[in-house]
Amino acid sequence: MRIIVLSAFLLSATMGIAQKGDPATYAKTITMGDLKKHLTIVAGPEMEGRETAMEGQRKAAAYLEAEYKRMGLKPGNGNSYQATFPLYQVELASSKLSVNGRPFAADKDYAASVSMIANGTNTYSEVVFVGYGMSDSSRNDYANLDVKGKIVLVLEGTPGSTGPVSPRGAGSLFGKMTTARTKGAAGVLVVSKSFPRTTPSQTKGGMSLTKPTTEPAAGITISEEVATGLLGRTSKMTIDQMAQLNKGVYRSELKITADKKVNELESSNVIAVLPGTDKADEYVFITSHYDHEGIINGEIYYGADDDGSGTVSVVEIAEAFVAAKKKGDGPRRTMVFMNVSGEEKGLLGSRYYSEHPIFPLEKTSVDLNIDMVGRIDPTYKGDSMNYVYVIGDDKLSSDLTPITNEVNSKYINMELDRRFNDPKDVNRFYYRSDHYNFANKGVPVIFYFNGTHRDYHRPTDTVDKINFDVMEKRARLIYHTAWVIANKDTMLKRDMPLNMPPR
Ligand SMILES: [Zn+2]
Image (cartoon, rainbow, N blue to C red; front, side):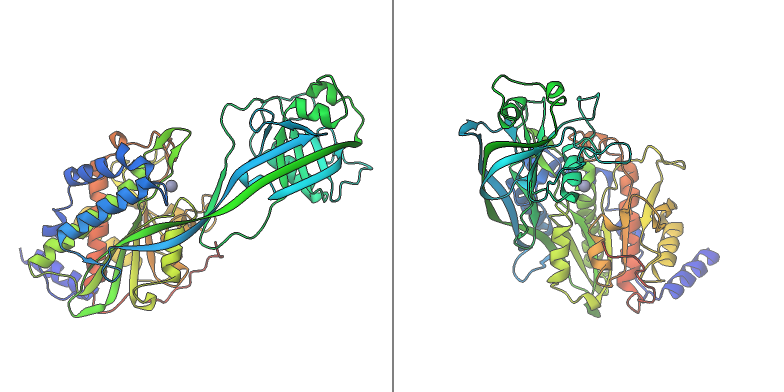
């Protein structure tokens, strides 16, 4: 008995915690059952995959807002639980392509994705045919050809194999565009056997926080039919037959029209606050992203692990702190529970917050970010039902690692795996979730993560595959870490460099 009392005293002395009730009492409110209840809704079909700036995302935000309100948390953005931010998205409203006055139909004879076609009408009187358009040490299809400012016509695939190619390989549209561009071409037409298209071309571009200005060169895939016209033939040629033709200039009138517009959208971060006691003007953030990929080709991407798991963990951790406050054990610092959107579009919600902070970043002690904590990494070698990847605790503050280790050995006893702190990690996970935008502004962060798995960013990332027992342990570990940081005498030291190149 005495030893336990003494060690508890020593622990609180080393961490500088004022005497409070036992945080483990409130950790018990974070349960598998509650996590499952919330996740079944957040990652359910009603939420339609929660794509940023879409109806499903707004439904998820409304659900989170209602939960925080029910618990009695305060709105984090003035009178509102949501902080909206503007987004821009380029859309290809329509396109046209004709050869010598003969019009062709989109997706039947040509495919133009929004990011690969230039806006407006462009007319060309010739194309430069470069065969397979390869240019490397063994073969140069561009020899003696000047393609500067010209439209290049290339055949899909590589000599001897015109079948499907890897999406980014040398024989891909991307690879051929890159080669043509380095030669100075204004645009590329890739002749493909894959027409008519079975899936429509992407008409919506990526989202951004600022109005897009750059106009990319045209890179369009065309059918053998269109290519036949460009090469001045009347009876349809196959790619194999075209490969026999001379390389060089072919005169034909090619007209390409694209009507692109910029859509102004809006999304939101959900922010709820539990005011602190004697250090209320200092902040502890717990974050997750609640957006996911939405519906792609008619399939819902549920995002149960990514990042439904982190989102409902934030809700449960908030509830534990509320329970503590009700018993007079409220945190000294103000707790900010923030579920951001726009993560899958490029960490946009957290970037917007970090550039327009509501609470001063220099008074923000930490961001504990939770992104994917409900599954098991199939490559994990240790106790797969009892681990979490801890990322970023070796940067910015030397307080992060000892606090994590102490609360873990006292309350949880998980395997804390820090392999992704290696700056040479090829996955670059440190850059790939929302904590990065806090770290980039100097706020110490920890990123909690289970690793990837076969359902990662696939429609099969569903609730039935979540391991709620290990998820509960991970959420409790984060809660205990937050508890210590929220109740310490001082904010976390900022005594270590970020020491990472910019994202
Ligand atoms: Zn994701």
